[in-house]
Length: 136
Image 1 (cartoon, rainbow, N blue to C red):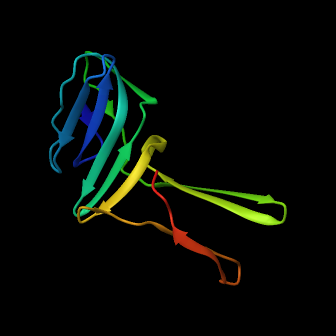
Image 2: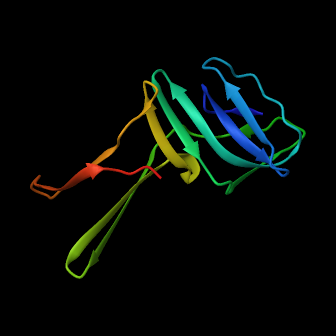
């Protein structure tokens, strides 16, 4: 199995509940080996210098590993979502961050999880809302 993450690791769970951690260094492209079968993607970590994206999942994403080399294509990205609803004269804004495949996401810098903040402005630049996003 190979990964598109670069430096990082992938955590897979087999059908019997066993966890398998596959790790790669920055310049390491060599394959890792698993028995053929069905696995659930439980999360991944992508590392770049002092930054790390760490994801977690309850196992919704399935990965089939066959007898031939299998590549797992995961992107070390932050996916942003914004939903806006107007109700009874009030505006409700829901913001979200996730990793690739909509996995739960934490962002670390220098070994510490960082606070992610939001800022909502109107067309004239007046601040309508600001604060921290909650993880989880």
